[in-house]
Structure formats: C-alpha cells, structure tokens
Amino acid sequence: MSDSSERVDPALAAGNRRQLAGYAATHFRWETSGPVATITLNRPERKNPLTFESYAELRDLFGQLKYATDVRAIVIAGEGGNFCSGGDVHEIIGPLVRLKAPELLMFTRMTGDLVKAMRACPQPVIAAVDGVCAGAGAIIAMSSDLRLGTARSKTAFLFNRVGLAGCDMGACAILPRLIGQGRASELLYTGRALGGEEGERWGFFNRLCAPEALLAEAGKLALDLAQGPSFANGITKTMLHQEWAMTIEQAIEAEAQAQAVCMMTEDFRRAYEAFVAKQKPTFEGD
Image (cartoon, rainbow, N blue to C red; front, top):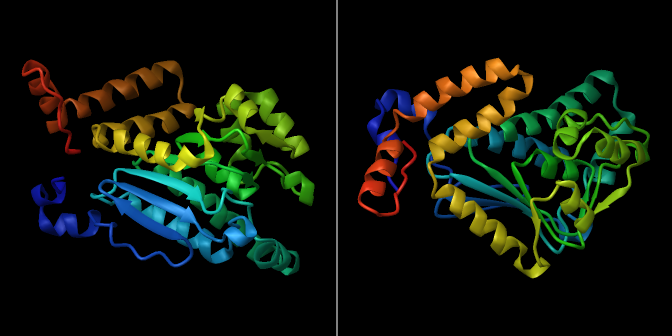
C-alpha cells in the first residue's frame, strides 16, 4: 500500500500524516493487519469496563486516526464473550459520587469527546458486539459506523437505572436516527436490554453473526471497506454526519461540492481505467 505522504511536502506531511500500525496501547489491545486495526477492550473478568484512563486513551487514539495513512478501517470488540459493561463501577462510578461540579463536567466532556473523535476520524468504525453491551459500551457501539451483533448480545442504555438521564454522550441525538424516536425513547427511559435479534429488526445491528464467527466477519467487512476508495469513504462519513443539520437543498449542494472533489482523485481515475480494462481497481486512497 503506497503512502500518500510521499507525494506531500515533507513539512506539511510531518504534522498531518502519521503511521499508527506500531502504536502501543496501554489500556486496551491494539492490533493491525494490513490496513485494518482492531481495538479490543480486554478486561474480560469484569466484562471489559472502561476507566478514566481507557476513556482518555480511546479519545486520543481516535483523534490521532484522523492523521493516519496506514489504517483505513477499524474494528472495536471486547474480549471473553462480552463487548463492554460501561464505566467501571469501582473505578469510575464510585469516584464520581465524590466529585464536585467542575470535575464532573470534565469527565462528561471527556466521554463526549470520545464520541466526537469516533465521528471525526475518516475511517469506518465497525463494532463487533457480543454479550453485554451496556452504558458507555452501548454508546461506543451506537457511535460506530456499522454494528455486527450476535443473537446473545444484550445492549442496554441503562443510565436511568443509576439515576442519570438518558442524554449521555449524544444518545438522544444519535440513537433516534438509528432506530427511530419511539424505540430510542423506550430504551433511554427504561434502560432495558435490547436483545440481538430485536436489535437487528430495529436496525441497530446491520446483521447478526454466530459468536464464534463475529470477529472474523467484522474483520472481513473492515478489509472490504479498507480496500475501497478510502478518501471517498471518508467523505461519505463526513457527509453522513454533517447533513444532519442541513436542509435538503443545502445537502444537495454540499454533496455536489464533495463529489467534485472526489472526481479529482487518482482513485477515480484508477476506477475508470480498470473499468475500461475490465479489471478490478486497486484503490490507494489518493
């Protein structure tokens, strides 16, 4: 895979292009296979809960992915048959009870910044959801671009169960757009778990997989996307998010401008030449 930074002024590339295959994660597992990176939440003995440290590292890593040239798609999964049980009761929930307002706002802004960073990175993010997917874990799945689940998955936005509002980390904005206002209202008011088959019917999951095949299926989907026109895919992701706040007329004009930019890429030319030659195009993301 060629590195587009080779065709960019070195001084410009130095601050805006980076390789992340060698990233050494501290609070979760990070692995790359070609253009696909896999984030694995790996505290299986507690169903992979998040801590202050893992929140911050995830936020910062997704922020760095905006500049990555070697990662074109991301899978996020949990170890040991569960996705993520949310914020660690002992390491997050307990301390939060004792914090004052400025520190609490620091925490809630940090968690929201993780969702912002996931939405802002150009790579498609695929959540591979098995078993427990609760609280912040449900938010991470919700914030991904695509979701593969299993019949035994249980997704719960259980904030009201701990005396909090359902409006956490963008849930009241994003979840209704995925499954509809009425269904989102039910989950956010009751905190009940959404089963895998129900989640697929409601449109939360793109499809269900057998538990033993889930990670492989997510990886295959990620590789298919990574081998596509990654610059254009990044534009698609950007427009999917930005057009929420546009009128239809504004969206049509924004898409006209975005598509014209994509028509200037080498990948567009490669696709045409491959079509003429009756070959499959090899996209390079430029």
